[in-house]
Length: 115
Image (tube, rainbow, N blue to C red):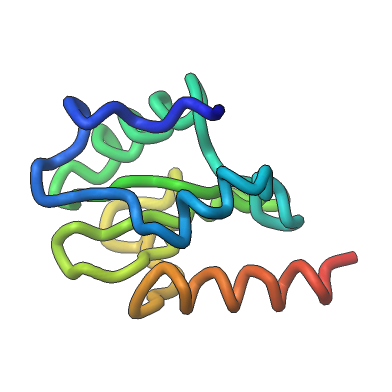
């Protein structure tokens, strides 16, 4: 079992989507170029994003291994935000997906084409 953020570190209205939990239950943690976040790395990423982008409510769940992009639940908009971590505030937004399943489909397409 992987360590996700405890409910005490999450907003009360947020819960992990079933599709995300199914990935973890099935051991699908890496699908290059994306890697799911858990444990200390996840905690550090959540804290770091909060410090670098304090006006946003982001819950990270995956990162690209070949750049600084981080996939997050954007609690302000209700969708998935791809944030280019370490970019200047206001310049960090790279892409949006309407929900986790849409992001996952795109991530698996990238996995198929990744070399």
